[in-house]
Amino acid sequence: MLGELVTETFAYDGGRQVTAYVPSETPQAVVYAGDGQLISQWGAFLNEAAEVPPTMIVAAHRLDDEMERLSEYSPGFDAGRFAAHEKFFVEDLRDWAKSRFDVALPAERTAVFGVSASGELALAIGLRHPDIYGAIFSASPGGGYQPPGDMQTSLPRTYLVAGTEEPFFQENAARWADELRDAQADVVMTERAGGHGDAFWRDEFPLMAAWAFGQPYALLRPRGMQAARARPPRERVGLMREPSKPTDERMVADALVIAYGMHPAEITRIAAGTATLNFHVTDHDGDQWFAKVYRDRTVLQHELDAVELAEFARAGGVPVPGVRRTRAGNLIEDAGPLPMSVWEYVADAETADGGLTGDRWPAVGAVLGRLHRRLADHPAAAPRTRPATGLKDAERTRARFDWLIAEYSRRETLSPFEAWALDAAKQRRGLLHKVDAILARLPKLTEQVVHGDLASPNLMLRGDAVAALIDFMPPTPRYVSWEIARIGCDPRTILLGDEWITGLPHLLAAYQDEHPTAHLDDLTSTIAVGCAYTLASTYPLAEPLNNPTAVTPSLKTYAHSRHQSALTLLSHLNLLHDELG
Image (cartoon, rainbow, N blue to C red; front, side):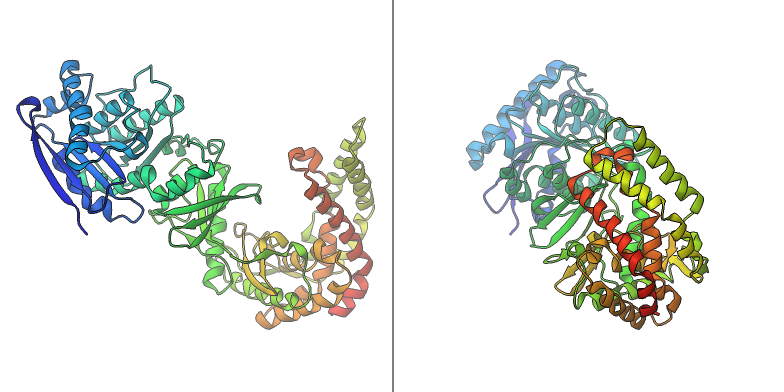
C-alpha cells in the first residue's frame, strides 16, 4: 500500500511549509531533511525497497533564493540565520512529528538527510545533535560548510555519496570522509557513475536507509558487530592499501548492501583463508553466499583474472560456484573500503582434506577431465607439448636447497620443526639427481591453462560426488600431469594407505572418458611428475625462514605428510608407472 503525503505551513519565517511522507505501516525509522519539495516525494520509492523498514520522511521546504537557502543550510554564511533555521528544523519538525503522527523515535532510528546544499545542512545538524540523529545521509555536499576542527567524540554514523561526473562535490564528500574517519566516526563513502541531480540522489536514498535502519542490521547487531571505519574509495586510484582493520561482519554487511544491493540477514566469519578474509552470508530470501574480502589491493587484477577463469570453466559445465556481480556489473567490488567478491555458497559440502577413497576417485577424475577439456580452449594459451625437464629448473632447485640448508645451519638454535625441516631438506637435496633422472626419461608432456591450485582444500565434495572446484589461479600454462598429480597424489590421500595405488587408475580412466583427446603420456606420467615436483619443492620446509607467521600446527602436519608422501611415491614409482601404462 502507498503512503500519504501531508503538508503543513509553520509560523517560521512568515510561513514555511513542511511535507511529511507517512508510510502505510507504523514507521520504524524517520528521516528529517531539507529541500522538502524534492525529498518528500521520494517516500514511496524509498519504502518500496525490500531492505528498508517503514520509514517516515519529514522535510522542510527550501527557499527559492539560492543565497538565502545557503544561509539557512550552511553556518558559514549567516550564523544568525542558520541558528534560527536550526531551531526550527530540530525542534519544530520533531514536535510536529510527535504531536501529529505520534512518531518520536530514538537516535538509532533517526537520520538527517540532504543533497547538495542541504547535504551541508545534514552534516551541520547531525554533528551538532548526535543525541537526536544517529545517522547522517549527505549526497554531493557543497563546499560552504567545512569540517570543524573540534568534532566531538560522539559522532553519528555517516553515509556520503558523490558522482564521478561532479568532481567538486566528489572532493567535498571525500574531504568529509577523511575528517570524520580521523575523528573515529563510522563512515561509508561511495562514488557512483553519475552527476549532480535528483535521480542520482534518489537512487542512493534506499541504500542509505538500508545501511542505517535495514532489517539486516537489526538482526546482526546482537551478534556484537563493531563500527566500520572506512576509507574513501577515491584512494583506489594510485593508492593501494589493505582494508581497514579489524574487518568485521558489520563492515562486510555495509559493503554487501551498498555495492551489491544485497540484504544480509546473517554473516559468519569462516576461519579458512590466508590471502583473503572469508564470510558465510545468508540473505533475507534464505539464499547463501560466500564473501571473499581481499587483504591486498595491489593484487586485484590478479584476482580478477582468476575469477574470470572460474567463470570460463563454469560456462563449460565444470561445477564452479557462480560469482555475483556488483550493482555496477563488476566481478570484483573495488570502489569501496573492502575489495571483495561474492560467490554462491557450496552448502552441505566438505573439502577433500580427508583424502580420496572409493567412488570419489572416478568422480574426481571425470570433473578434472572436463575441466582440462574446457580450459584447453582458453584464449590465454593454446595447449602445446614440452620436455618434462621444464617442470623444474635443476640448477635453481639445487641453489634453493643449498641456501635453505645453509640458513638453518647458521642458526645457533632450532625449534623442533626447524630441526626436522633441516634434516628433510638434506635428505631431499641428496635425491635431486633422481629427480633429474625421472624427468629426463619422460616423454614430452602437454602444457596448457589449468586451475593452478587444485589441491584438496579447493576440491569440494558432497558425499562421493564433486560439489565444486574453488579458488582458481589466473590463467597460466602448466603441465597437465602436474595438476592431475596435485589432487590424485595429494599427501592426505597417499598417507591413508595403499588404496591410492588402485584408486588412481580409476581417476585416470574417468578423466580419459571425459577428455578423450587427452594424451596418454600425460596420464601415465602422473606419478613420476608428482614425485619429482614434490621432491624438488622446498615448500613448506622453508616457511620458518620465508614466512614465520605461516608456521601453524596444521602447516607442520602438512609438511611432514608432504615429505613422507614424496618418499612413498618414489619407492613405488617403477611399479606404478608399469601399472598405469
